[in-house]
Length: 192
Image 1 (cartoon, rainbow, N blue to C red):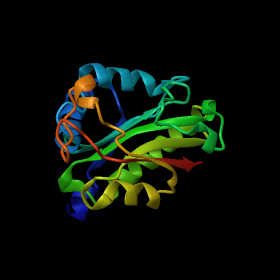
Image 2: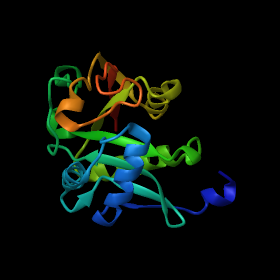
Image 3: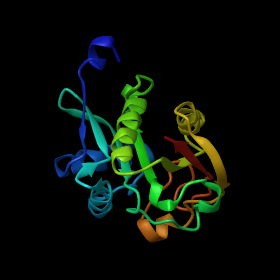
């Protein structure tokens, strides 16, 4: 990506008009059936609190090249893959960073970091003091972990087989493992 193209990047709140492009890019990057209409509608609704949207998308010209889907505090489920006793924050103060996705041709340009920065600013307005994510440790070159750590993420706990069974429950096909995913997730937190 050239410097000229970077200046063409627009960051805007995530809206229903972007659903189809977000689904397409999410499935391209994360694997088939990672996102669908129902999941995206749920995540959009969960990103809204006090009239503030914590999720954003990035466009280069008219093409969606990235997105950050963030669930507002108290708008996400704390499940067995979460360790709230280790967070140091009440669950009402923690947002959830569902995913940060950047098109391959635009990686390494700062789009992902800018999406995260802007999402944090919105989450703070919603009352968040920290954000939690489950980082995919099998990402190419472990880039997801490196990126999140560089942005201030601290490891809370590792969770082997985090997405095992998602093929049966979500139809998700892991790009590394296939239908039977054995990937490990790093539960990580960024404190604001």
